[in-house]
Image (cartoon, rainbow, N blue to C red; front, top):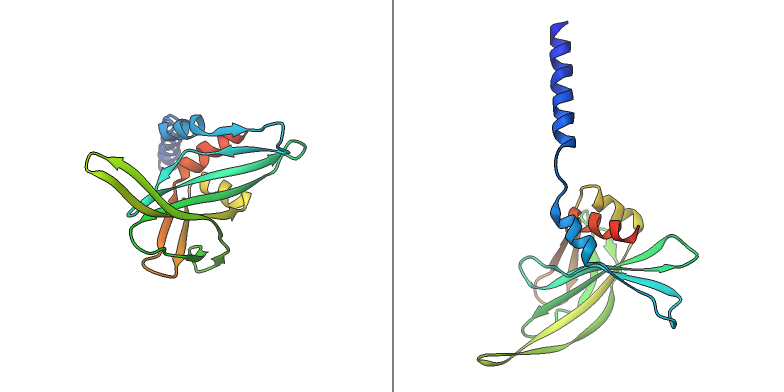
Length: 175
């Protein structure tokens, strides 16, 4: 009997500790960084999250959405810009963990040059978009990072990871 009581006290202690945990400050930073735009020429409102640096390669990813005024559901897209030297990687598709292929939308390619103290530095960029389901974005916000591999025709594939805190902050800005 006393073991059950001790177990109950321990469980209540764990629940109390979990509820006292302060929220990740990065969630609020993402929420504050989401922009919203609708002009008189637009039918839909556009939301765009802040840039999130890619790991292991130059570039960034962000989430953007379009929402009709009359419809509460939005269309979401993962936007990725990969920067590198040399020839374009030519991303052909994307893959989810487990191997399921996802279509990608090539958006832009070209050269970006920046001035530095040593002169002009130029690199190639490739921008792609991947349509996301609302359920995938909500699942990422609940604790599992959004992970997608961009499959390159040339060179190494690129792993894009949107952390759970980014997805949670982004969805908070939409509501």
